[in-house]
Amino acid sequence: MNDTDKNKLAAIIRAHEAEILADWLKVQASVQTRHDQVHEAEVRTLSRDFLAALVEALRAGAAVDLRSETWSKVRDMLTEVSASRARLGFSPSETATFVFSLKQPVFSRLRKELGNDAQKLADETWAATAVIDKLGLYTTEAYQKTREEVIARQQRELLELSTPVVALWDDILALPLIGTLDSNRTQVVMESLLERIVETGASLAIIDITGVPTVDTLVAQHLMKTVQAARLMGADCIISGIRPQIAQTIVHLGVDLSAVTTKASLADAFALALDRMGARLEKKSAPAAVR
Amino acid sequence: MERIPILRMGRFLLVTIQVDMHDQLALTLQDDLTQRIVSDRAKGVLIDISSLDVVDSFIGRMISNIAGMSRVLDAVTVVVGMRPAVAITLVELGLNLEGVRTALNVEKGMALLQDRGL
Amino acid sequence: MSETPGAPGIRAESREEIALRGSEDVVRLRQAVRDRAVTLGLSLVEQTKIITAASELGRNTLQYGGGGKAVMTTVLNGTRKGVRLDFIDQGPGIADIARALTDGYTSGGGLGLGLGGAKRLSDEFDIESSPGVGTRVSIVRWKPY
Image 1 (tube, rainbow over the protein chains, first blue to last red):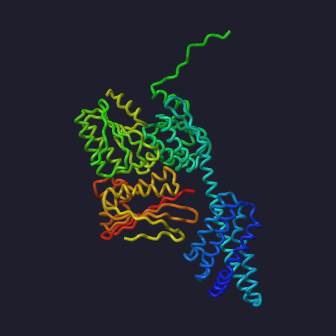
Image 2: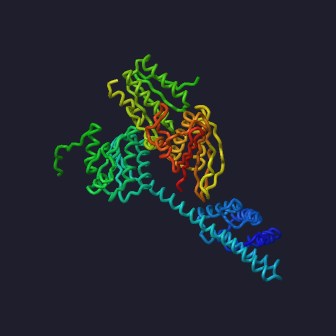
Image 3: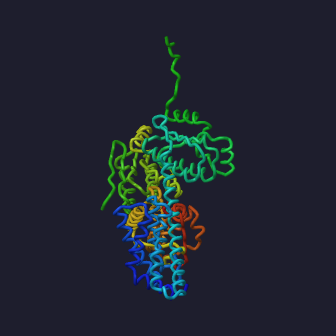
């Protein structure tokens, strides 16, 4: 696409900006399923600003490279539109429509201006299509990214909510971990444990990994770091439920567990914890028979 | 010159750090504490850092220094109230505050000091 | 030493410069970084990490660089946002960077944890130093989602 083409396109859009804008808004409205005053006013402002930014970028004359400085304003606006619509739960189509619906008004304007010159009309229409397609694709990508971020955040929030920290006794917390631990989940869970330690004032936390099938280096490191952090805060941790396979993996990985107290079972860890507290569980003498 | 107040509670000294300290303030605190341990014949020092949202290596060093100096003066230092985010960061930083006792809060810190028969 | 523009495709905005001439400036630096981290919506742990890293590096600039400045920018990569900090001084420079990054190494009386620690606390870390010219240390912390 050479410079004069774009300038033609840019010039035509500029010359008939108001009309193109009005048509564009009509097309957008006909496709949108959401209708409310605020939204419509926003779309009007956004479309008007976008059209102006588009013309400016086209007139700058360089090739349409969305990553270039010339197109930064347009790019930012598209990113903003896509991100906000993704967050609001718009569908991908509704989001991309913002850009693609611009084709109709632009094409009909081009037809009016260049109707007599078939070649010119074809060239400019092609130029317009190329630009709008690029913008539309960019919008879709930005939308995707935001959706992924929304999902990631929701996952994290779910993780935080489902952290099962249990108060076993005054001063003793238990964190029974179940399922596969990935680095991310481990971090979230460990941070939650430390917060609960502060909230409850429990000086001892038992991290039970009986329900964890495998542990990799990163997870083992996070566990170690959590124990160190707890110690710095003035609490301590016991790791229980280390199955033989995991013990082997940990030794194999070269993770140094010597600084941490470990117990085979949660029950053993609890007994040890009580011992440290200076408490002890005893059976009452045989209860009287119930008549 | 601004200084961090040091309160006396029986045989203990209590310091609550609530401001983001610049170097001079930290050094002054170190000096003041050392002097007070001697003048008040204190057996224990409780440093409450529950208001600190950042502890860098300089403050970490200050705390280690205070613990070291008080030990020489036959007093025990306990640091209380470290926030989880701070603890996690210190671990990442590689600072382990060797020789510094810690407790979750002032109450537990006092219990620790009292266990020593103070 | 001057700031590097950063990788292509990454844009920077809201540039703020903090002079590092005295120890009070390190306090100001921490406050500025905290405000920026909060504005960006970083979690508590993430905030603490970057403020602490900034404190370490700012102090380094002061103690070993003879003073200098910190340049803070918000960086954008698509929809992802982060904080970038460049610590620049015209000091003596570091001759052996690899060694300086090992914990425990120090030429002064400090613990020498500054560089290695700051690196571990950040998502990205970059250092450029020439003896006799100066040093630039850059760190970036991205908002994870």
